[in-house]
Image 1 (cartoon, rainbow, N blue to C red):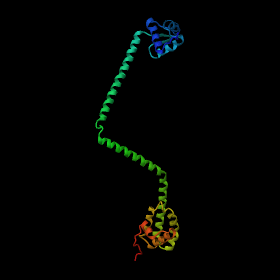
Image 2 (cartoon, rainbow, N blue to C red):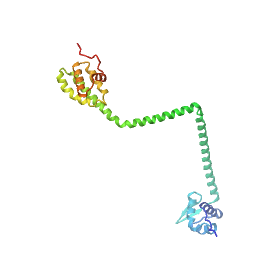
Image 3 (cartoon, rainbow, N blue to C red):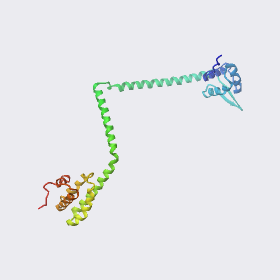
Image 4 (tube, helix red, strand yellow):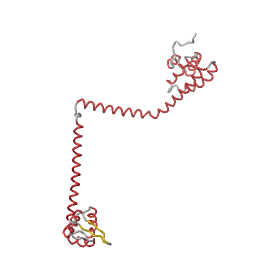
Amino acid sequence: MSKKKGLSAEEKRARMMQIFFETKDVFQLKDLEKIAPKEKGITAMSVKEVLQSLVDDGMVDCERIGTSNYYWAFPSKALHARKRKLEALESQLSEGSQKHANLQKSIEKAKIGRHETEERTMLAKELSSLRDQREQLKAEVEKYKECDPQVVEEMRQANKVAKEAANRWTGSQSLPCSLSVVLPEFCHFLEFIEPVLKAMHIILPLCLTHTSDNIFAIKSWAKRKFGLEENKIDKNFGIPEDFDYID
């Protein structure tokens, strides 16, 4: 023979409520532990758990009198409890229906002007392509991001040296004294010639307004030091081809 299937939790709760409704009496826990197994097939070990779940849900009342707990439940209260639960569920259903209607309206409104057309498809593809390009450019910028501070700092230092040197050249009255002070610093400055070539445009144009001697001296030194051709020096530093001493 197959083993008899036990009662589910809901079946136990329903049968426990039957005890209260049929007798319309008040019970202690020990009374229900005797009645429930005999009349409703609820095991004595599970009576307390089932009873407590009904109390927690407000389906059974419990009152402590002295040292004992007394339990009761009447059909009228159960009916009112069901009505309240039904009203709560109906309210939730109404709210849900209203939200659904509002969402449906929003969807219909959002669809206006968004019908699939050839132009819309083309624009969508273009937008996708532009977004891809943006991501590629962002990745490219990110790749060189770590190098930026160093390059900026080198340019800043080069500009500082160039400015100080230019100030000395423009304020010098004696060529030998000027060169003895300026050329060592200018030599150090030209070590940065590759990354800071643009910064060098500050130097010689400033000198053009003061003395030709310093210009020719520096050009001569640069040709000997770096093996640069004169026309390249003139081109890189903005020196006119017809530059000469002022008569």
